[in-house]
Length: 244
Length: 64
Image (tube, rainbow over the protein chains, first blue to last red):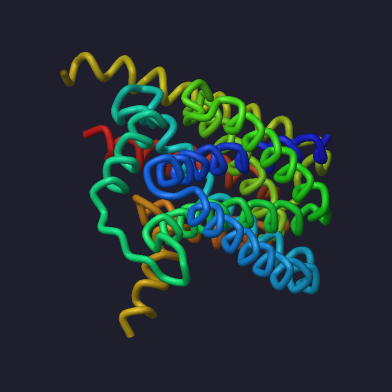
């Protein structure tokens, strides 16, 4: 059961971040230069692989309880930020993330930027694609490493991220445009719920608490986080017309 | 120095995000969980409730 949650969480979080990275790469690729953009993507992927290769084995050396406390706390803070944003979006307090709009803004900036060639590359296209993939990829690496190490299964989390990468890239190549039909807020909501659930579970264990039924209580924590989140969405939606 | 500040700023944004009170609240709640666990009383119930309260307070501030 825990493995299924782990796989789903790593897969969903990776898919959301990869959709955002794809939008950036498509925008600079279409408006500037594909060779420079794809070179940026390639070097960012190598940098990410080096980060994961360096940090992954180091994390497995930390005692499990200390690791779960630190990782749980980080996931909890990270997950609550995702959940907070997703609840505010779902209740109408913050505009939904729009990949089409993000693509149009990136493309407009790419068109307006001056051309500077370095090492035979369009430097703007290279750096934007590199930064976009590296920054979005860091979030994926963070989630894969923390989830994987706290559950003792970095390979499973890495496989989930790889499956998400393949799916997003294939969908991007097939669509040749930003993946606007991906229900991004729903996915972010789900990821926020998963990160918060694992964060609560591991951080409490790391702090010395014992869950009744051990890992069997994980679905109960998940149900609690889901109920609380939907409750806040409903309450904020009711409150919103009164504010308008 | 500028690069160091940018590096620190990136990680602050990356982990802590829009509301630093959530991070501070999580740290306090974990301390309280550890203190409760040290008394041999059941401590598992505390963190989920603390998280719900932190989320409520953060959303209330954001929705104002």
